[in-house]
Image (cartoon, rainbow, N blue to C red; front, side, top):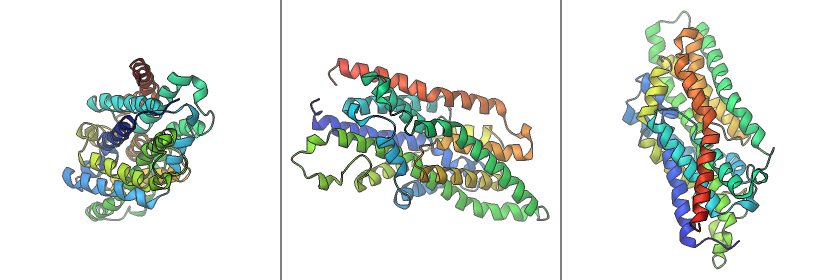
Length: 346
């Protein structure tokens, strides 16, 4: 297959960074909803705080998730510029639809679904490296929120018992400070897992089209194979996500921070800490999980620790339905986008 024009590939790189920006503002609620709803930070300060740690994360953690996205889900032999573009379009459109509806769906699963849908549209289901990393990725759709819920519930109960004789005012004051740390930790987890997914997509594109750079030393791109992530890709993706987070995502923040359950600084700390632990574990093993699923489970766990009725299960159920639709919906949009691109010679 002939290589795509350089301008086409460069345009796709820009669109990939646009997805990271949209991922940042769509998933801003994951990082800031708890700290905003507890009024520990004003919204403007919260987004800056989260964006800073989103960006720092790319320098702190490895790139195991990027490697999964780059070579663990789709056969690179069928990947070309049009597959990447169609996958990104599927993810972006689904993110914008759910953002408009105020639904905290997973940008991660939108990208996974879009990438897979475009590849299947080109080469059929054999384009998917099944089981590969698919089993762990799909299993963690359930495991991530359950793990977040369980850890948050256990941490809430344990801290409640330890602090049972403390004055409520003193507890509130202490956790207003501690929540700054837990919010930072969660933003680190958000940055390291979410930004890496686009890194893997970009590296897959560069590998698929590296013949374009035949007259340009490959070492200058810091590109060796699908498992290696160039430093400039890491920086660009981290910066795009940080800027997106700074732009906010207030429709989803309202759903996450106010409608699901009522949070205090104590509860916000428990939710963010539990979510951060879940994300660190998943990122260590290279599993691309949903930060949205994770923090939703953790917030629900905090509410359930007080009483089951503290969680608005109707809102939670609506969120779950959106989760279930994300991969197939993004895949369908991406598949259609690929067909259209090929029809116009893309």
